[in-house]
Image (cartoon, rainbow, N blue to C red; front, side):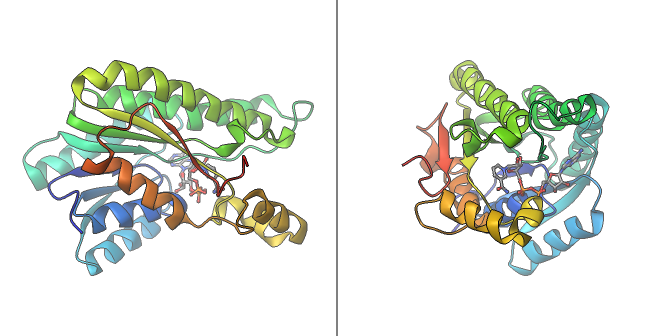
Length: 254
Ligand code: NAD
């Protein structure tokens, strides 16, 4: 499989979970992958080693995405690393994957939790895209991680769901704006996926069952279930798909 041969992909939050699976999958298709991490450099380097073991190519980029200066730092390192490897700082695929969960009802959520959710889940993807635009090649791809909870309301995660609603709107408006440049913009909306983000839910039998029953298949989703969708959207096969909010929740809406 080499549908992404010659392409360069930047995946945020790729040291674990869904981002890690997407990194591996795009590398498997031949893309040179930038594995971004927030804090865990060792884990990101492990992802690179795994990709290289499988015959792919990747490198790590570290940056905290809690502020615009973090986004700028990410692109400074990314551009430098890319220049070294390809002689250009242009790239093809941006996957806005980094994100944080925020638990708490409207009554209980604190201002600092609300602000943090907005900073990582909304502001960072917005500015990551803004800074990507001058470097993104024609026929490029932007893939945003949204969530099925934008459609299936879960009151305990109102603020988190709001952040993903904002990502959906960003996806639609950008798809229209960037279409003339040949760039597609789509969002993937996972249901409950078994990652570290959901470690506490996975350990609680009641929550574990709730997560499995969310899908009509009666199981939790796996990172690979999401990564395969990202690989399709990133590939030439996805060229005619843009402005879509793609369900990846095993039919939770049915
Ligand atoms: P995860 O917690 O395993 O990974 C999230 C990644 O984001 C981590 O690598 C983390 O380092 C990075 N990150 C968080 N804050 C950061 C910061 N300030 N700076 C830099 N990096 C930071 O989560 P996951 O389950 O793999 O989720 C990936 C994406 O998918 C997220 O956007 C999440 O909201 C979305 N999503 C996940 C699920 C699920 O059930 N797991 C469901 C729907 C949507």
